[in-house]
Amino acid sequence: MTGGRPPAIPVANQLQIWNGRQLGEAFALAAASLDARHEFVNALNVFPVPDGDTGTNMSMTMKAAVKAIPEGDHAVSEVGKHLAHGALMGARGNSGVILSQIFRGFATGIEHRDELDGQDLARSLRSAQDMAYKAVMRPVEGTMLTVIRGAADRAAAAAARTPSLTTVLRAAIDGAQVALDSTPQLLDILRQAGVVDAGGQGIVIVLEGLERYAHGDTAISDDATPTLGPGPGMRFLDQVSDLHGEDAYGYCTNFMVFGDGFDFDHVREEIAAMGESAVIVGDATMLKVHIHTERPGQVLEYATRLGSLDQIKIDNMTRQTGTLIAQRAATTDPSDASGASDYQGTIAVVAVAAGDGLADALRSMGAATVVPGGQTMNPSTEDLLDAVNRAPASQVILLPNNTNIILAANQVAKLTDRAVRVIPTTSVPQGLAALAAFNADQPLDHNATVMTEALSAVTSLELTTAVRDVELNGVNIAYGQTIGLINNELAAAGNDLTIVAASLFERAALGPVELVTAFAGADATDEDISALRRAVTLAFPDAEAEFPNGGQPHYLFVISVE
Image (cartoon, rainbow, N blue to C red; front, side, top):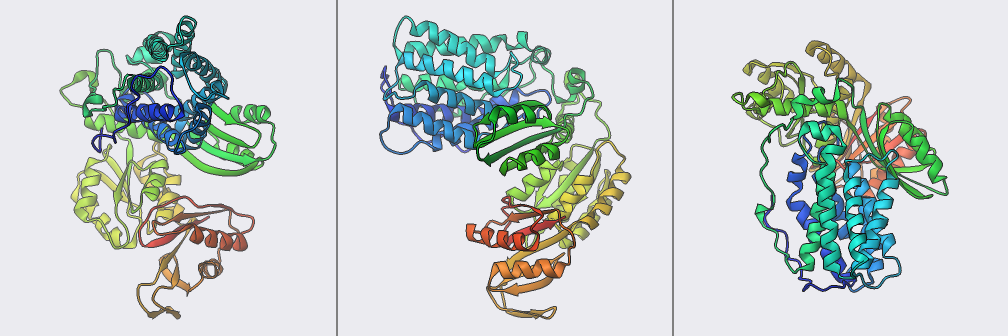
């Protein structure tokens, strides 16, 4: 665990009935427990893991659920509604979406209840189980579904004998643990890997957190996260092909769609037919979708006909898995024959970017490493050399993503014994275009050629603020004005962001535009985003527009136009 101990959480004094405040505090402790052990849960994903950060995804979902609880005293039914809504809106990955549905079912089980006892808990766990199974198009046993069912079964049996909250909760934990221990027998991939289901382990940790609250034990120590090494029979990422063959994994596609009165069951079936591992939840006005597909564009195109999209995230699972295999190979102790890898020849991409959002975008497109840096904070040749030498492959493609970094990148190629090709990207949009053309199955020089050719297909635009008065390229600029650049060349300036952006688009002479992606900087406000959105709509009424958070300093927006 990082960041020290979580904040202290009030004690429940072992009450056998919880009010709404106590229910919220219990889940807050459970969330802290899961956060403390999320790396332990992550470590159970020792085979292909586009959703391999199960612990992280479940922890982030739990945090979102608890954050949604309103202050003050409320009925448990009201707290349950807020927990469910927060979990849904903050759900991450397959495991997070399923967990959000467990919360939704839990909330249904305590509708119209002011307080919660053991019998209420048992009813809520059964409802949670039912909702979780419904969320998955093709439920598979040996997963977190099995574990929540085991918890619900034991809780129901205990509640038939007593209304004691602690007794029913202990029974639920026992049932969940038994079910968790059975997952390797139910799912062959777990048996071969020598682990239990990661999502199921997360469920057990959450229930244990609730029990600790019930007994007044709110301490979360730094010892809560054990250090795992390879156990007997445990397989790691470099042995994935032994378990799964050579099939591609496709794209892990996540998004929300907001509409009005669509047929949920029909839409759910339509989307599920477009891929695998579909988890689709919501109602007639909102859907949260997680699906693995070879054609994410087809899924998103269908979804746009339903309503407006939000929280779009697409991960290339084939590249992710290759990168993770490479990372495992690079860190394996050569003396450990059981973990040794014959991994050879995979190409790693090292990119440069400033801003967490830009870095995430590059990673989602296949970059193995992102070096912090950009305008005014150029990484040194040594920084780049270190990243290349640590890359999980003997062949490396380097994306400097800034004019001022290209020379340093070129020096790196001369200083390492690894095969390095520098693609002369001058912006992050160019880096993303290059990554879109990258194919790890093709030779290094072929990739260098096609990635360089891809740069001409994208125009990079930037909006920032002038730090001094100047006249440049025939443009008079006053301190504090918004200025616009086209491929790093000054093109427009003014006091109104919408007008400057519109002028920028006009001067760029872009022709037909299909997609505008504007990464919002660390200093961009909601008003700035609205102003830019108006300019994009006016200039490109038929284009798709996205405004993800880039987090970059200095630049209000980094804009890619395709």
